Length: 144
Length: 487
Image 1: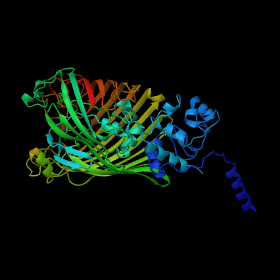
Image 2 (image 1 turned 120 degrees about the vertical axis):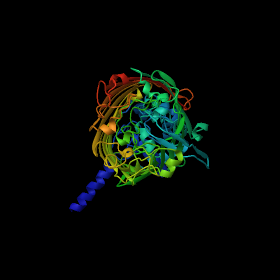
Image 3 (image 1 turned 30 degrees about the vertical axis):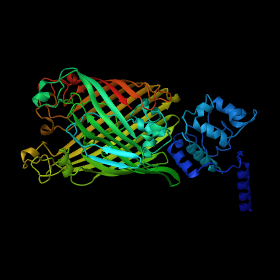
Image 4 (image 1 turned 180 degrees about the vertical axis):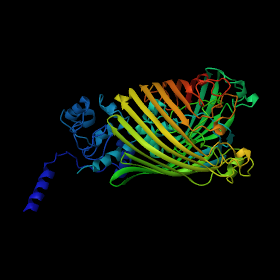
């Protein structure tokens, strides 16, 4: 009986976890190479572990997350607003909440401040398409 | 003053042409710059991404990570990303509070380079060429060769060849690597040791006068008389360990190049152990580390066929160093503040140099057991990675040793008391107009204009009449105006 209750509780906990909208997209690059890029560059400011905030929010679960929405991290108003309404030039929406996907991540990773003026992320960007796509592929693997 | 040497070789390999030069240098007092535009071209990032003050050479957290990953990160495009070469030149003007004694002139057999006088000299100090970059995703190098324009000699400078990988062990990400280099401490990524610590610039000009005592890591062992390998890892962004061994250059190589041993010829492998813990929160990062280095030498002997002689005993050095550092990389690089420093305790067992049964040319120490300690701390502030100010404090102290320190020199470098104790401050102001994301002709145009002032409160054992010939510590206060150009 206790085992059944424990299993039921665990199942409830899993299903009760925040749902992350994640499009079923094929990997756009090499996630192993992206992991190395993460170690060389992104890990200075971001963690790939759940619930670990560094200078930036954790990248675990970032793919499919609404921009500016990780609880407990103090985002710029610019990025929060972007998450709420999108940007028609990068997201093809009309003022609806958006999530990080391949298309907008490719622009973001090329230079965050060129995409969203006023964002706190000062890193000048990953310099090549391959680096960006590999990094996105790695992000696509960082989920439950 | 450090002897140094270089090997002559010419190798062409793949897309990288490697050229090294051979030369002999008898003394070198400068620490040439090592901010390298070739890296900026290779990565596509501006110099400020890796360097404090957009030219450094202090490293940002990103710069340390670039070094630990073996200089292999790429991302740059165009011609700049394909040329692993860079050139650095230093111009300087130096003024002593009181002119050096005439005995220091080269014409009188002193240490002042030819063509220079006892005060107020200036000109081209030095030029360095760098071969720097990644060969592939695992192998990279930073190789520097420097021309001392005051002594008219070429010498091997910082050399660091790395093989690295990003891995995962004990459930956490880590970097691992091997560093083949030519000085203990050169593999270290922080600016809190003798190799990479402040002052980042000195001058070849008027190089006769400087404190006559320095722990072996800060003066005896040089990039020219040593070589070694270390294996390192940075685990989970927190724990750094670096283990290695060093050796003296072989007698044949030193003879071929007419170079000296420095502290002597190593009797075996010299172990080097270093460990550091770093942690970060927000825009702050702190590190605290320790290093142990052990070296055993046969003393230098002019009468020996191989230049060293251990038949009357050996000299042993043990250094224990504690280093520290703090960086505030705040508010979009508008205001950056750093602190770096170290404390070194060196135990010296100079049996080889204090044996009174030995020939006179081997006798250079009054007693076998000595110690030397040094405390060094630096604070730097940069505004918009362009305007910098630095204050440093250094004090050296240890056991008196008449034979070792009281040389009787009349050129201002002696110590009448036989004491090694010296204390000084350095203040510096810098202007670095380039090296940013939007700088003109990035990454090829880089410069630093600076003004540095040494203030000695104690020199070679005393504040007044330290050499027995009436020279005071404050007479050696030095104003140094310099210009770095790197492209």
